[in-house]
Amino acid sequence: MTTAVRFTADRDTGVAVVTLDRPDRLNAVDLTMRDELRAVWREVRFDDSVRAVVLTGAGGRAFCTGLDRDAVVPQPPSPYMADDPLLRVGPKSNDCWKPVIAAVQGMACGGAFYLLGESDFLVADTTASFFDPHTAYGMVSAYESVLMAQRMPYGEAARMMLMGTAERMSAKRAFAIGLVSELTEPGGALAAATACAAVLAGYPAEGVQGTVRALWAAREPAIAAGFAQAPHLIALGNLPGDRQAELFTARRGAFRTR
Image (cartoon, rainbow, N blue to C red; front, side):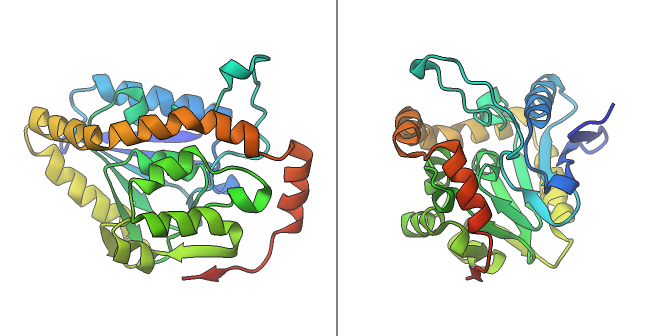
């Protein structure tokens, strides 16, 4: 059986590596990957031999490009029960308080921010780039914007979320504004993130996990308030699916990297 997520754990170091493994689809999240991610975080929660996690993407071209456009997401008929398929793909939303370090190579965009927003810090190599295509395709960037507004200066978050496909934030710029904590040469992000994770895994687990929980608590009220508004903003602002598809086809083209 093929899997969309690879999970490996080094019991000697206490470090696990979670790899998004759909490189042919630029590690876009389909419903299988969503379900496997939730299962992985549940496994990590209860495995005392895992004390720190590195989250990365396979293939080198992308960390993750968000929700797979071919994914068919069933929606309940009631407007009070809107279902966002990516809301539970990250560690914090699965009540996992072990430290998670994201190792980013290539593109990270759109729904990738659900994962990056719930990682504790980011390591990236110089090939990494960050952007959010929602507005270019007639969609509201709601949950993504809420999460990324907690990770970088407001003006930088606003520019990235509003400029859509016209711009990409370079790894160098992401490092300069603090979104990325360490910048490596091409191909070096995974090793650098793993080295950090090994340090954390060597400390007493209770202190590390308590610190992770305290750090998230500082952001939690703002995220909860933003998420409460998100479904209504999406319902009001998203174009119908056929119009989104037209824009998706029409607006593939040049972009600037800053």
